[in-house]
Image 1: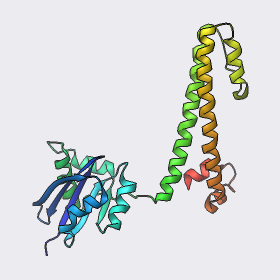
Image 2 (image 1 turned 90 degrees about the horizontal axis):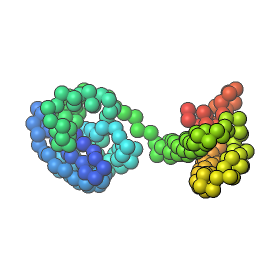
Image 3 (image 1 turned 135 degrees about the horizontal axis):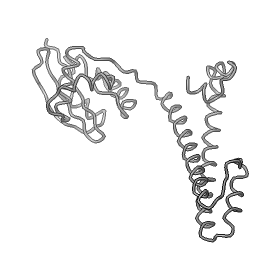
Amino acid sequence: MTEHYAGLDVGVAETAICIVDLKGEVRLETTVATEPDVIAQALAPWRATLRRAGHEAGALSPWLQPALKDLGVPATCLETRHVRAALAAQRNKTDATDALGLAHLMRTGWYRTAHVKTEAAYRLRLLLIQRRNLKRKFLDLENSIRHSLKSFGVKLAKVGRGAFDQAVRDACADDPLTAELMDCMLIARAALWTQYLKLHALTVRAVAQDEVCRRFMAIPGVGPIAALTFR
């Protein structure tokens, strides 16, 4: 029985599929919607002889990889840098040729497997990322306010976070336009800080409920963020 290997070039809307046999001859080239059940249906006629179906690691991998596995597809998530290096010599870069290149990688075995974390791990990672994003936006907005007021000789370098809001309002009290402008900025800054605190509380709660994180925090200098990040 001839073995077959599939390459999946995954896009947000569509996925290019290419199937080759053990000799490298193309047996199928098609494009389907990027949905696990649709991809599995396209591969169904080859299920008995399909040995591996490779797709490059990307933003959709945490969702697509386990879903394909559950549908019985022998899916393999491929390390991105290795795939790009292997396909760099292609003359034409299209979804179809990338799918063909991935199929040949699966046939030859010249690839590295990327580890796909569990859904729970990605949820905790999302919590850490969005907490960091809100804090960065908050600091960017605060630094923008500080920098803008320097044009009028107002220096807020030594003003703490708690007194920052009132210090800015006092500095702009005599200028109606600047006062109104800064009021908008301060309201946005306060909203970002409020939502950041909510995400920080969720992070601390997640750490408190995780035994491994609590053990990490027994190490001097390790706080909840470092513990959860390493976890």
